[in-house]
Image (cartoon, rainbow over all chains, first blue to last red; front, top):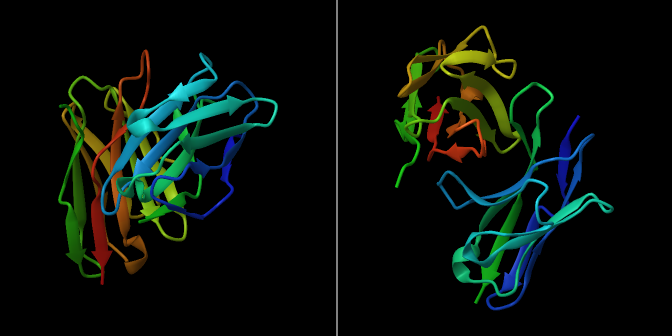
Length: 115
Length: 114
């Protein structure tokens, strides 16, 4: 069965410094991996998606993630944090075992950005 | 800018009352998902529809929850009777199964059962 582990429940950075949100996955086959962001009292917005094309995936708002099969990781990064990046971030793996794209969500990482 | 819409955005009700939440998927999307988000359990899949047919509702408490798609533009999630433990944010998502199957989420319905 597919699963995903987000290694940090909270991350705090200063504005203008790099962001690293860590995610490890478990999958019995080549997975599709996603990062979604949820701002307070909002729905989930897709940041980026990996589907076995390029291992470095660029998303919206300057975020990118690198798929590393040897490490079973899909960490999310951004070179310079902005105050508006403060939100909860979910690493997600798709499970097609049931014949459809069932999303398995990590527990989430809450990103705080300080001035 | 196509998006998933959900109504109501907030609902406060008393235990034992019926609650109906509605979702309008993105036009043309043929798959619809219902999720529940709580602090304790995180995001859980409740039900999945493809071409309006329910294909997986294994995550849904069958005794009180029901999900339907009366037509391609409306999905409903009903709780009867509601209980305090149902308090959560309920999200609807839709996707076009092929070629990308990326799920797009609505803003959610925040349900409080007193």
